[in-house]
Image (cartoon, rainbow, N blue to C red; front, side, top):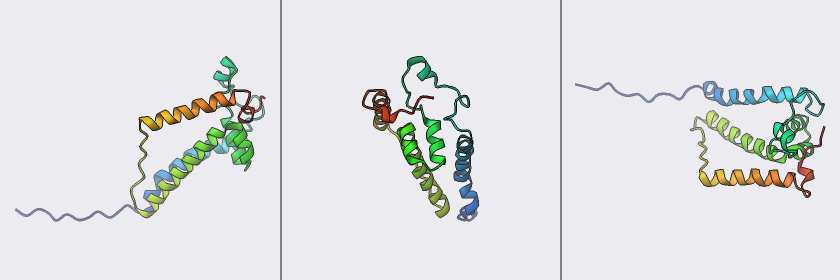
Length: 147
């Protein structure tokens, strides 16, 4: 009894491989485009942060919409002032997306992301330090202006 010969399957066409990274970028671009058009610096367009309302402290995400708006208009300084942590996150996400897209273009494996316990602890510590510093007397440059 002869087994059927196995044939190596050809990699999917490049457009099919690019589908997931392009869909992810579209999923991010649509809300970013909305925030670029609807200015979060004008009161009444977006709800207030419940953490800020309840505590009077800026949460790690406060100023994130203003940050996206500033980045969409090419204002890196304003974006850093509104939420430096978000700018860092967007940079990391951009690098990861570029690696994913490159792997799709070249037919390689998508890069895996492994975040172990130590990295999660460092990320949480970074978020905590950012939150405390932006709410302390030395960190007003890290807090968005009140509306």
